[in-house]
Length: 402
Image (cartoon, rainbow, N blue to C red; front, side, top):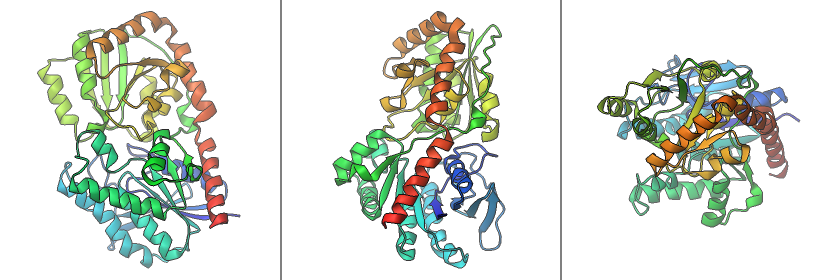
């Protein structure tokens, strides 16, 4: 029996602009199974820092994308990570409170509220209570724990305590929880005594268009590419330091993407007088596979983020390129087990430089086979069709048992 599913995700989007398309991709799978899906998102883009849709006089736009209904809401704009960004976050939840009752939408059977920020899931839980339907809490980022781990927030600060309280409320209201990291399962069990049997591990995945023929060509230089967001969480200063330590003009580093740290990284590059780092700007999601296919090696970088799932890691693997991983989250580093790249030590730039050069020198004639290992892994484990079926099963179980 078909279900009417609502998803609240402030930063959800389609494939025509840069960024993550997790819920759009999962929703398309659910629609193909006969369900109805509505996604509530904001048209203001979090890295482009501009509006991407045109609203009506009520500050909304309703749009159909491949059978998935998007309700875009106009939020407060911002230019950098300051108080205006927090106003933007709050305005998403605040405006939906008043907008949704006016839309005349069919009553949902189940509501999913997803962090990046906790107010999206909090307002989702409110509407689940209003309509007396089950609420599923999806945790992509933990607030405040992620910021505490990154040494950005003090554990005993007022804002940490406020967001911890919001997290507790949202967890307690949930019928089930979806997580992207196995560490989040342990976190919920420890912090809230949450039943592990009620938690679904549903990491990020890839669409079939990312699985492309492998092409390894050299133009006298090794092309190492990073494609994704450029914010503190990605820790890309490590890449700049790595390039400076290598001092190897036979290696080009291409950085595709945008974000609040881009200017700082460009300044670092200029100060170190590095001529082999190139900032290429943002790439629409639909263009990502072709862009990645031009590289020899692909670079994954995150700072002290332990509770998320690396979206680009699996997209990288799908293109059949060897992966360079520099992350402190070991669950985001399956490189050794799959044998599809090299892991670098973020705490030791000199060792990381040596390890990277050794990997290139010892394996450059075998990059294609190494890349195939990663591609075969995502084919078997990370297709959206596989993940979409798991999400459908969860929705049916929750509604049946509510």
